[in-house]
Amino acid sequence: MGVPPHQPRPGAPRPRRRRRAPAREAVRLAPGSWAARLRLSAALRRLPGHWEESVRQAELARAYAPEEPSPHTQLGDLALLRGDHRTAEPHYRAALATEEGDPQARVNLGLTLLRWDSPRAHHDPAWPLDPRESGRARRALEVWSRQARLLVAVTTAVVALAALGFDKGAEARLGGYAMLALLAGLTYRQARRVGVWAYVPAMFGRAPWLAMAVISAVVTVVAFAAWLVLPVAPAFDPVWAGLTGILVLGWPALALLNGLAEIWRGHPSRALAEFAGVPGERAARRDTGVTLWIVLGRAWSALAVVALAALALDPFTVGPVSLGTPAALVGLAVPYPLVAAYRRARPHEDRWLAAAIALSALGALGCAAGAAGNLTWAWRGGLGALAAVVVVFALRSARAWWRGGPGPWRASLLMCDLPLGDAPSVGLTPEVRQAFAYARSVVLSYTGPHGPRVVGAVASVTKTGELRLIAETPAWEAIEADPRVAVFAADPLQRRFWVEVRGIALGDPDALRVTPKHVLVGEFPGRHQRR
Image (tube, rainbow, N blue to C red; front, side, top):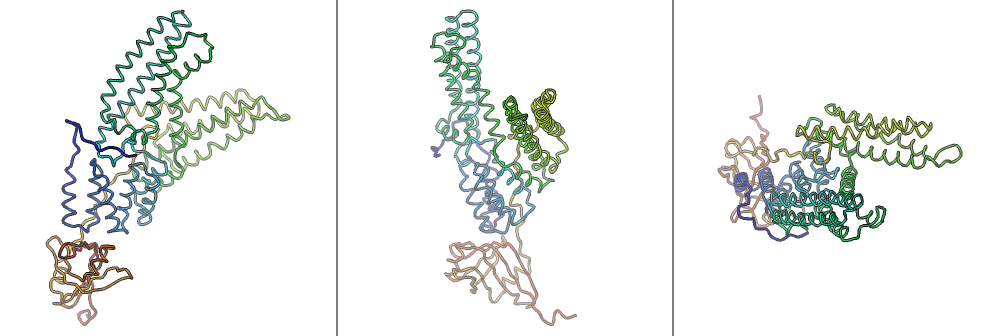
């Protein structure tokens, strides 16, 4: 979704640009260095309005060094931060194809399989907008939606109680109108804090649950106004009952839907397999624990559905067998994937998770025994165990909130963000410099339209350790398509060794600049090798 250009507000915080200048200087000094391009891409991605240039620099790094995993990982990270999981996955797999043990590619591939969204899912990093401003707008919208729904729910209960319990319908309506006036003031206050209204539709497109929260709040307020206008009806009037249900239960229903959607997104089993590939990485250990809680949520919700279905079908029988028995027996298989995933991952530091998994298995066993043997105590024990899982989850969440640590929810997933492009520059030894300075002939090898080509060239070595070549025009044209070249020279003084420099060639107005990637030195066969 397109968004208009953004001008920062007066007094708005400006992002730091300290890391951009050194990264640009490194690229200026060595334009063919894939590591310098990658460092510049990493610096630019954190600056609003420079996202496209960051992607372009990462693509150049990949073109200069396709055999390196870091450029592929950087492109995957850029796609993952935008929520483009389909684009991120092949980049991570390409990085793992070059280096199977790359921790950043392995962890972030697991997050991609989980369909992870960054904490700023509402913000597109490609926008020319400071993320702090879009974050301020998101918080204002969330606060308003919570305030509106809470005020409406409380006022609805008070008005209904006053009208139906104490026959104070007129006074109750006045209280409802007063609440609407209060809400109008709160709405004006939060609307002023949004500031970037032009970006709000795009934010809703990137964060559907934010949109649903705001829309549900608007619907709740409109329904409350209509509820006030309607005449006071008996307690079981369908219109009154329906509107009351919307006003009071709309918020919990939205929260339940959001929780189920978070639980059933992605492929946690495949993600756990990726996290297991780098057990020593801190982000992998943390994400493993959170992912197991997600698997537990899936198992618990499936067990709850199976138990409810078994209870509903229990009165119906086919011969001597209750229809609820097969449904309850199916529930025995539900905890198996959860237990198997836990045994493979072994997150020993989270005993709460182990207790919740044990209670889930006990709940499945109790419900199955109660349905098969028509045992009331078994039913109660199984349902009680499933309820205890909720208690354990609540206690674990409260403990995480109190300590300020990661909780058992999707928002605690952590992206692996290690420094990329930290490979040292390839220097030229004095012997290599001497060979190119005094060589009688220099050979340039490149890839042409019809295959490898070799031409003669004139070379010199710069102070920064680059080669400057003068070659024929067809070589320039071919190098624009594929900048990977190799330059050969022999030492004319000692006549004992040869030099091969493999690197990236880029065209200057008067010469080709070759940034070295690999330097090979070898000896010619001869009498000097005899002992």
